[in-house]
Amino acid sequence: MTRGEYRFYECENPSCALRFPGTESMPRWNRCPLCRSKIHIVASVQNPNEGKALAANVDRWQVDALLDNIRSAWNVGSIIRTSDGIGLRKIYICGFSPTPEHPKVKKTALGAETTIPWEQSNNGVSFTRELKTRGNILWALEDLPGATPLFQVEVPVQKAPIVLIVGNELSGIDPGIIEFCDRVISIPMIGTKRSYNVAIAFSIAASFLVYRLGFSATATPTGPEEYFQAPY
Image 1 (cartoon, helix red, strand yellow):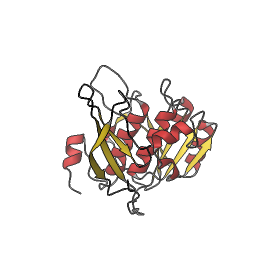
Image 2: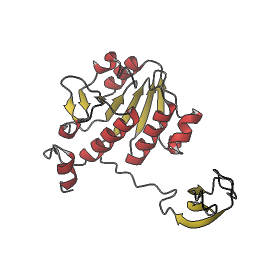
Image 3: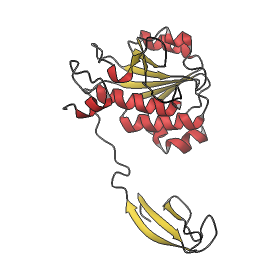
Image 4: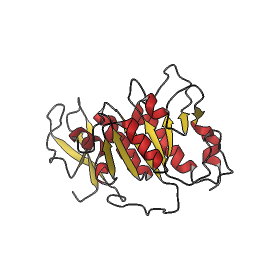
């Protein structure tokens, strides 16, 4: 296989017929992983974007992420992968959040941990205070009374770096960090559960904010339908 090529295999056992993908980094498949029968290649695809990076837009808002006391290395890795995909500038790792050096973070980040600069601090509150003194705009993603619904957020007047903060999967963001935040935003929900997985919530909010900041300060989408229909 060549770099970026993905092959799909199918089990020759009719009672199994498992169909599954493989890549050049995987061992050569010669048996079905379920029933151990023979397999054969049924398709191959090439990822044309493998190894390519989009050009940076130096004039856009700078967006960073701060992860405070995230328990799961899988969640941290997923957040790092999202951050790379949407072009975040830097990631701050605070508390006991595992760093990009953790093997489980690497497994979920799929190489994105090598593309984004990161900085670590044991104390998220003192580090948030430091970020504030550096001139950053701090936005906490938390479902608190008075939080601004994500799809109604307005673009700040000053074009300072925005740091999107997410906290512990159970207890949320440290109240000491909230005190330094310029804004608290929340994701509207209509289901019976009151929160998303932290990595999913971060992906929704960060993706929307990055693209929302591409609009003029006078255009304020109020919901996802209007956002996706708004002219660029």
